[in-house]
Amino acid sequence: MLNKSVIQKTIIAPTTISGNAGKTVMPTGPTTAPPATLSVVAGVGTTSMAKTAPTVSSVARSLSGATNSQVGGGKIDIDRFIDNMMNIGKPNSGISTSISEQDIMDLLLGVKELFMEQPMMLELDPPLAVCGDIHGQLTDLLRIFGKAGFPNTTNYLFLGDYIDRGRMNLEVILMLFAFKIKYPNNFFLLRGNHETQLVNRIYGFYEELNRRYKSPRMYHTFQDVFNCMPLSALIGDRILCMHGGLSPDLYKGDSLKVLKDLVRPLPDPPNPSLPLDLLWADPDHTTDEFKFSIRGVSCTFGPKVVNAVCSKFNIDLICRAHQVVQDGYEFFNNRKLVTIFSAPHYCGQFDNAAAVMIVNKELQCSFKVFRPKFPNAKIKVADAQLTTYGKPPGT
Ligand SMILES: [Mn+2]
Picture 1 (spheres, protein in one colour):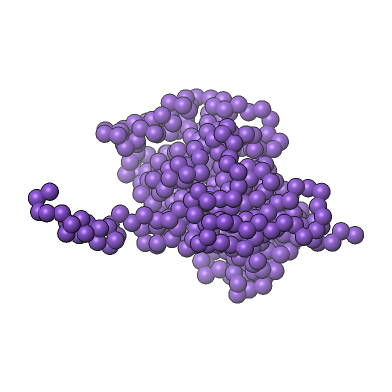
Picture 2 (spheres, protein in one colour; picture 1 turned 135 degrees about the vertical axis):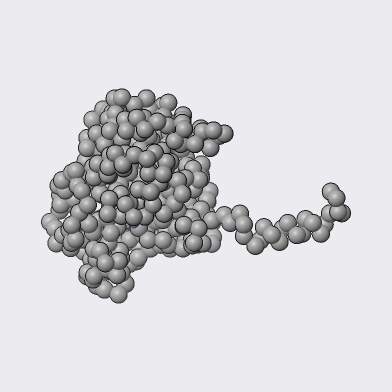
C-alpha cells in the first residue's frame, strides 16, 4: 500500500522573508515523478529557479492547434490594438482617443469566443507565473511584466479581480484581454468576484466606462465576457487555483469534475453555490470546516477542508488571491494554501507589497516580491532637505 510520503509530490520549504537563498527540501519518500518542491524566496530577482525560457512554450493541455491572433475575434487586428494600448500616455493619446468603441467591442467579442473554446477548469503545464488581484493598477501590472517577463516570453495565469478600486481599470482589462487573444495558449485569466455585475456596478468600473465612453452597451458586453471566464485552473495536476476559495460542494465532491462541469455563460452566481465560493470564499483559522463569512457572501473554510481537498484530489497546494496580504503572498495551513496579491500599495491606502508566484517546469515555486514605492513619502522629503543643505544657495 502506498503511504502518504510516497505519493506526496510537492514538498514545501521554509519561507525566507529577508534572506536571498530559498531552502529546498527534497521529498522524504521515493517517487517516480520529478520531485516538486515549493521553495520560497523573497525579493525581486533572487529566485532559486532557472530563468524562464526565452520563448513562450505551450502550457495549455488538450487545446487543439489554436494559432495566435486567429482564435476568437476574427475581426480584431490584435497587433494594432496592442500597439495602440502601448502608446497610451503619450501626448494626446488617452485611451478614449486612441481606441474606438468599435475596436473594444470587437476585442470583447473575440475574447469571449476564446474563453468559451477553452475549458471551465484550465489544465496547464508549468512553467508559468501566477498573479493575484490587479484592481486597475496599470503601472504595477507593467512593473510585473517588466520583472517577471512580458507575455511574449513568460506564460501567465491571473487569478481575477482586474478591475474596480484602481484608477485605470479599463486599460488593465483591455490589455489583459488583448494579450489573451495574442497568446491564447500561454496567457490565462480566471474570473474574480469583481468580474461580476453585482460588484463592478458599484466599485468603480461602471462609472469609469460611463465617464470615458458613455456607453451602457459596452458595460453590458463586458459582463457577457466575464460570464464566460473560467473559474479554476490546475497546474501540473498538483496546484489548484481559483480567485476566492474552497466550497462545501468541492469538499463533498468525488472528483474535480464538479469544477469542470460548471456551465457557462454564468451570470452572477447565487448564494450559496459552488461558483460563488470559488469567487468569494476565504481561508479561516477560527474554523475547522465552514463558517459564514463576515463579507456577507459565501463562506470561510478551515484547515480540515484544505487537508481533505488536497488529499482527496491529490493536490499539493491551493493557490488563491482575493485578500490583501502584507508581503504579497501568505501561507495558510502548513503551506497547503497560499494567497497571492499583486496590487502593491493597494488603493493607495495599504502599504502592502505585491507578489507573483513563479512555478518552474519541475513544479518548484518561488515568489517575486514587489515592494511598494511611495513617491511622496517622508523619506523623499528628507533627501531633498539633505541636498539643499549640502549645496550652496543658487545651484
Ligand atoms: Mn476578490
